[in-house]
Amino acid sequence: MSEEEKEKSAKKNQTAEEVAKILVENMKANMADPEFWDKRERRLQEAADKVLEKRKKRREAQKEK
Image (cartoon, rainbow, N blue to C red):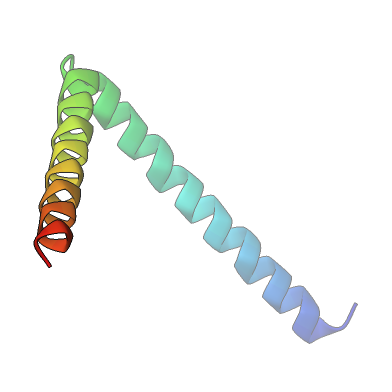
């Protein structure tokens, strides 16, 4: 393995470790909030409702043509 390949590998490992640390910190913060899962579910449901509403409007507009 050349020096350049070793450096690239080391940078990838360092980046992966940093990302993993950030993810763990984020998960810990989320789990500290007792309403985290309820809030998450509400956000997902609201997004799904918006998508369904847009689809409905699009279908109605297509039927009118």
